[in-house]
Image (cartoon, rainbow, N blue to C red; front, side, top):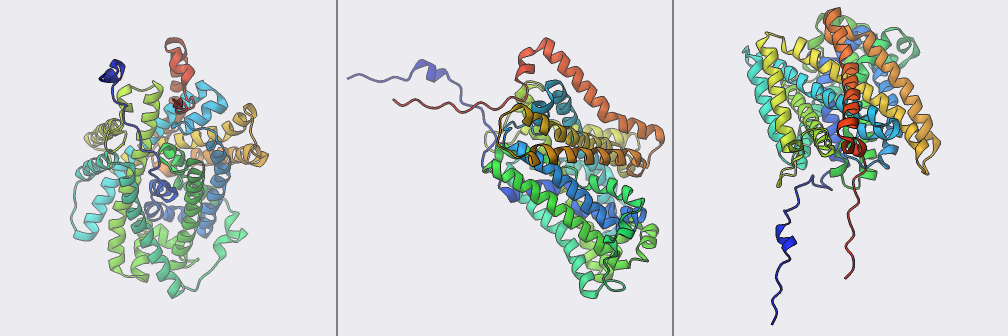
Length: 493
């Protein structure tokens, strides 16, 4: 009797490395990540009063205009998502349309931009924690422990599985949007201060110079919505799930923002709201919900702003980890960052690195005696936001360029008209943000110049990296943003 022994090559073959878990996320899960990154409650309570103060009662229309613009962008963006399967999202799309040097520049810009968006928000978490403790308990606490605790919470959330994060974000998102819906219900039931009015959407109040300022704030309020494609590898039926989640997220944000800004205007009245915003912009929403719902709801709003910030941080953290994973797999970043946890299937090494980087930046600002909101948040977050705007513009330009190179059956509306229109509108939005950069930072001209120059500087460094890779690591350069290999078929025996 013969005994079958294992083949030597089989014995020596190492186990396959862990990979991200496909099929983990549905449309709602991905939409939760995207909407949570935008932090609707924080944007409304913290930024919308300033938009009303500077743009007048026509401010709600500005959020609708921004939503329509980004929906147009999403048309070409999601069409291309059906053709590009790379985990690199933005940089993969830009590489396919505009070439490897620009794609590598975009990859570095994405990494720095998303890191800026997250790291700066730890300052907001510290500031929000201070405000909440003072409002609820009359206690003045230092901001640093709050920010460091947030780093640990977010680090743990990123370490766990992606579906764990989606469930957590779902709960937090319901809480923060729910308190705003509660405010809306109170205002609608009582008919506002002087009866409900629709003048916010009339040409006389929309076609004014202040709308340009509102648009700058409105576009910033959608930052991160494009991250739907980052989760392609973990999505169920990504050809359908990713586009649906993108449209759901941008549609919800545009309508919800406009509705809630209109609600708070009704709470004070068309003629009184600007004076109320000027007197106490930070307390506008709290005053409204106290009047129309009760003081207990204002207390809840303080708590939910903190959880809103935590949800935003977790969403950005997971997006950054997946960008770092993709770039590690490309060979651009160290291979260690491409390790995936064998049980949780999360890019945990990239997450640990991002947490460490965040801690270094937070501690550096604290050691320098910086203000957590006015400096850590605004000085780090603003260049990150600018970087993501530039990525959106490059992606819009890349869409028609890509479809000119490949054979396809997509219509011209999706592959040419929509992306070109979006590119023009996004370029206008970038111009508005740059023009009004002082409103985002509250900083000196020198600081603002440095912050505006950060995104172009990072992109130039990325171009230099592309040149270096082409000469020193040609294989990495040639394979950059290539399509994932098809799974080999098993031959019939």
